[in-house]
Length: 603
Image: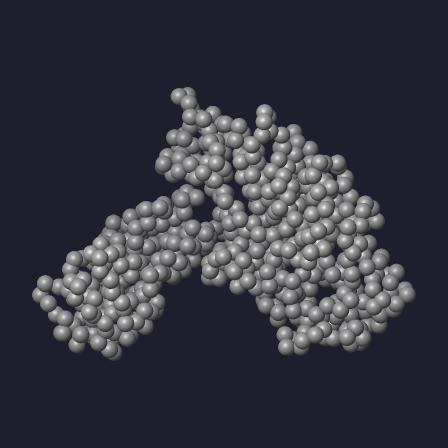
């Protein structure tokens, strides 16, 4: 299931020059962003970024998803802010469509419009302000409601309306990073010059210019300007002649050197207010300002989830939490908890609790409008995805803890469970990712993975206990074990004196140890911290060191005598849990996988 947070990550990545820069802007780990985008690719069923000489760049599917994602993120912001808005009497809403009839290439016009609309939506919560990238998308913009007319502002190169932005033509060429300044205009013109497929008004502007200022070696192609990152990498000696608005300081294009024509050729972006609207003039003003200010990047921060919107509609349709939970095939506390979270975000009650059921409040009626428009746009996106980017297999991604040995209880049990589950679900593509506890938790909350098997209880997250527990033992080099050997086991006070090699606090085993130490007001410092379990064991085999692990993780070493285990007193138990996001319910296939895990790990 595509989540709104994933789409916000994707949009940020499209706007920045690299994934690392996008992660910095989003204030998340680069690994979290990378895996989230990979998961999104699998949900969409198409590659969203491809590698070019200048790095990564959005693919055709990526540019399509961008156009679909921005309206959805705007819709989430509209729903949240419109519901939070205080209004006297009956709240009225309108729909303003910003129709962009420019050839979409994810250039600086697209970035400016997205950036302007983020602020506009916040300042005008009574208006759903939605971008729509031209008739080439195939479908007209969806209405706010069946009874609401959409007002349109049209941006185009047509000689109609008011000019709001001068768009100079430039020669763009891919040059090595170390090349420094852009070459002279004459050097650019000396080699091949390509004009990609552009709208007719732009070609007319260029035709008039070439009649007065001919350019040798110029060639017109049918390549879409959105593919310029790939084309420039494949043709490093070629200059591409385009309006500057088709370019942007983003992935794949940020290394292009730009040289304006001399004498200049200026095309104009024009705006036409097709349907009068109170916010139309302000929308035009802000987009003009965004275009003039350089390349501001929109930062969407959705606070509501797709699952919550789905639950809301079930509650509203059934007017009863028990009935809604039954339809959703979840426990009532799960759906009640999600309703409470929605109300916390909005700051208002969405339903009035009565003896005969739930009745929507005024805030609930407004929220319903938003949930319906989001659902309509998700359905439209799914239809487009199925038709154009086709995906006939579903996918499931789960996370598992790192393991030292394939014979460990966790790894052996998971292997048995997954193989049995695969026989019943051959149509589902399964991907298993390995990461420490804290990383897996972050991935679940971000929607990167659906499930994770962890060794620490997390009461704030939806979870299943797997009915298996193992005590941690002190795993030692034989010589160290001989020095420590005690018939009563090793207590925590003694453990503090042991030269320990431990993983960092991102690992659940370390968290379990620290919890036990804190309960007794103790602390310890390992001699080495390392997050590679195989390397940790390799060190202990060679030096008088020790660590904490379940016996099953190193059973073969213990049998061969290369390692020795000593009992810890008191016992520190590792219990296994499956966690998943509170913002979603498990599918039937996911629940069956949990059942298989329980059975395999209990044997």
